[in-house]
Length: 52
Picture 1 (cartoon, rainbow, N blue to C red):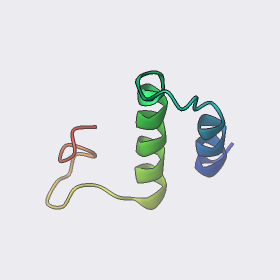
Picture 2: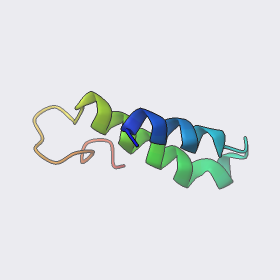
Picture 3: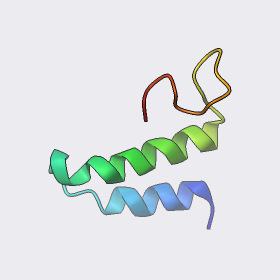
């Protein structure tokens, strides 16, 4: 399974309740950043800048 498929599966699990969806949205965010090769500027740690 590739990253985009994982993201779609996680999106299908969203309920619309922000409190219940927080961990799923965090997983989606991490996968999207991994897929795009994005990390905070001037950082060798992924997500240290945004705190995710």
